[in-house]
Image (cartoon, rainbow, N blue to C red; front, side, top):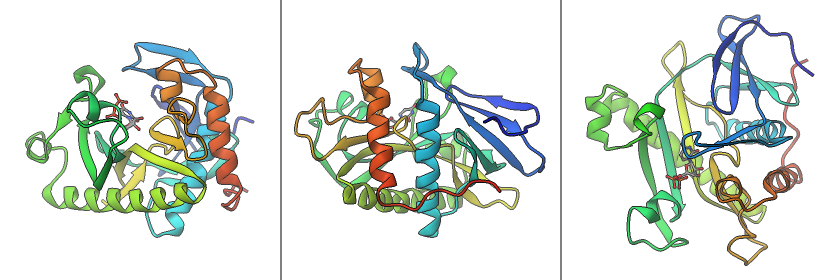
Amino acid sequence: MEPVHGNLIYEGKAKKIYACNKFDQVLVNFKDDATAFNAKKKSQLDGKGFLNCQISAYIFELLESKGIETHYICLASDRWMYAHKVNVIPLEIVLRNTAYGSLCRESHIKPGTIIEPPLLDFYYKDDKLNDPFLSEERLKLFDLASHNQIVQIKSIAFEVNSILEEFFNEIDLKLVDFKLEMGLTASGNIVVADEISPDNCRIWDQRIDDIQDRILDKDRFRNDLGFVVESYEKILSRIQAVLPKPRYYK
Ligand code: UDP
């Protein structure tokens, strides 16, 4: 069901952000649109929006229970959530526990190599520039974050990674890598924003040995492996088996 909402504030590739009846909150609507390779590849996947909304709600509540601040408030309906309005910092913060994807394309590291300690990479969230890799020095030069903010962002990102890696491991899922976005609240706090879902995490099923069959994330869409929605459903059902139901707006 569609909750009562105000004007569309922003439309991204996978979500729409609407105003709601509180000036400091927004309603986030998760779409079924699937895109990859900077939107060069596009499709509609029935149920993806619902699954990513639900998975994100579970993960945000898990993070909150561990003391990590996020923009999430509660679910508004099956594919809508209330969130605090934040100024999103234009950074893609990528955490890597196992080598895959761009790290392997850009180096001689073999896919599947354990990265210990985990690697944190910054990318400039700018589609026109094709999300380029950033050094911390460039991040400061481009005025994307101050030294103190970078310290905070890194500390939050590593903590989120250890919480999520441990959690997914408990349900026989391997968190290979993932992308986080963070935002600034009106009071200047840095909080985790956007979504945490198989669209921006690489997740492998530890109960499956086959290197293609074990993939449960957006790589199934990127690489035409099929069963995209079914794989996201598998992740949700494993999460549902161990975590309390997320809260709905009353
Ligand atoms: N990722 C993302 N959005 C992006 C780029 C990457 O959510 O625009 C996620 C991706 O799903 C993966 C992680 O960040 O979980 C690392 O991606 P990588 O740098 O390996 O890039 P890719 O191989 O996907 O091009």
